[in-house]
Amino acid sequence: MNLLEHQGKQLLAQAGLPVPRGRVATTPEAAEQAAAVLGCRVALKAQVPAGKRGKAGGIVFADDPAQAREAAAGLLGSELGGNAVDAVLVEQSADIARELYASVLNDPATKGPLVLFCPSGGMDIEEIGARDPELIRRLAVDIRTGLTAASARALVEGLGLGERVEEQASAALLTMYRLYRTVEAELVEVNPLVVTSADDVVALDAKISLDPGALGRHAELVADLVPDQDATGTELERRGRDLGLQFLELDGEVGVLANGAGLTMTTLDAVTHYGGTPANFLEIGGDAYTKATPALRLVLDNPRVRSLVVNFCGAFARTDVMTEGVLTAIEELRPELPIFFSIHGTGEEKAIRLVRERLGVDPYDTMDDAVRAAIAAAAPAGKVAG
Image (tube, rainbow, N blue to C red):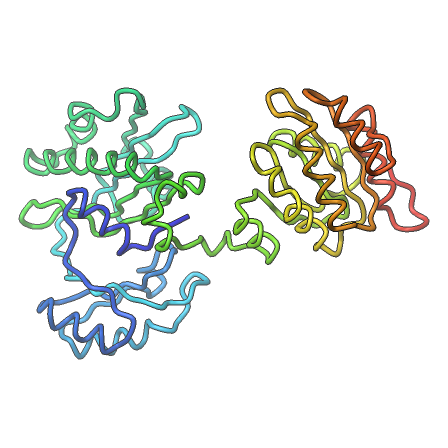
């Protein structure tokens, strides 16, 4: 989940990284007033969760308040990268001598924070990497010790930036890392981090993506979140996110409920392997089993679903507890489609007994058998499942 630029800049400024003076405007009149207060040449920047706004016409410059009003009138109500422009950031135009790139992000390879710094900014890091990969400096940070001042300074030295800029750039990295840890972000990116003609380092842009799993600990930021337009998904997927469920709607006919992302993916692979097509990704591990009724409703509200596989495998998680939740959901929603169970692990004897007693069916001995049965049940009349 992303913060808009002005929201990210507010956090950066509060943490100690300089940003240009600016005001948010939602009407042309407000943009004109903001430009008058700033009293300088301004940039009007569309506030949408999309990159490359400059190339798409989402950043317009104005030399006076009247031009700012005109520019805002053109931006507000338009669409940029599939996002409606509801607000613009009216910001003092920067005196740019050089553009840098800096970010702190989650690194799957090292399972910890990764700090990136590059003396060429103003473009996507992928473009920089493709053009001059050796320019990008990387530092995997040990989460136990954090980013040190010496390590931050080493990232910016030897690039011809000069002593004053090196000092400010390394301080910017430390500030970004502290903010990354404080708000439990997945990404804190400043592109460009500019050097002015006075050798001051300023964050000219800001992209901060927060970890959805940590939002409960940061209620003060939740109201400012903006979902990526590409991730808004279908109506069912939006409902799933609102429920805190990991749900993806797919194109098939075999619905899937499983505990844990790994087992869910394995079940989807099995459905595909045996000639079926999965209808969804939906895992109800952890405490998600307490949401079994809305989870099952998500699956059933997909009109393509013709059968359902429930696949539970528990080690620390108890399969009897998860099965109890799903059975209660089935009894409440009374689905008419056939349901096929595979249950193994902690509490499986009780779980299997519950399915027999309350539904009058036997779980299958293996996941493969349950999947094949579900595929056969979902097949159109006259078609033999593979």
